[in-house]
Length: 259
Image (cartoon, rainbow, N blue to C red; front, side):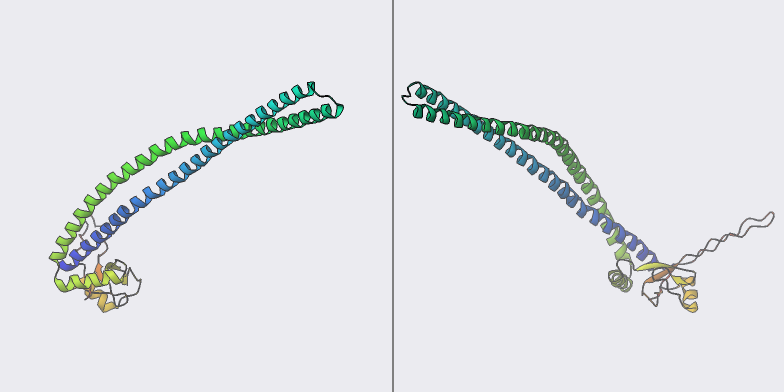
């Protein structure tokens, strides 16, 4: 196989690895951001439930204060009833007392409603607090793993990029320029295998003469359809050997692509 083509194949594998590492490094912060956003939304929901519970308690206290006020008014009206001089005065005080008693019953009903609401809110708050405690630990664990994974990926990326630069420096300048041109225009695939007379990247049939030249492995040959550099790996012979004979060894072929 032409030496530059061997290096191009190695460069392409490294380019694939480098791309995967960069994508993973970029994806890890996004993953952390997603779980942190979910945690934040749960925190806001908990705060809303806590605020609703606090408001509920304030309203209950307000109704309890109203009851105390009405009870004080009743006590006052009863004292005044004792000093009433006419039936009209007595009846007026009695009506006021009945009104106060109705207001007390209304406040008591509202307190019972608020107590039922508070029970559900308190249950939600306690459940959310327990869940959030677990979720916070999970988020911190995920962030720690993401930092560790990023460090590992970054080290692997640095090593791959170093090896990639070394390979690129070993390629002839014209071949490297062509490799880069094809790679950028063909979604990262600049080198591909040819088998059974076809380019395996675009699946187009190669001219017989071109395929024969490719099998010789004397020069770099490119697919006339997609323009990618081609290499050929001959199939392993599977003929059975005769008695006393060892299987014939297939002759290694060079991997080449047309320029």
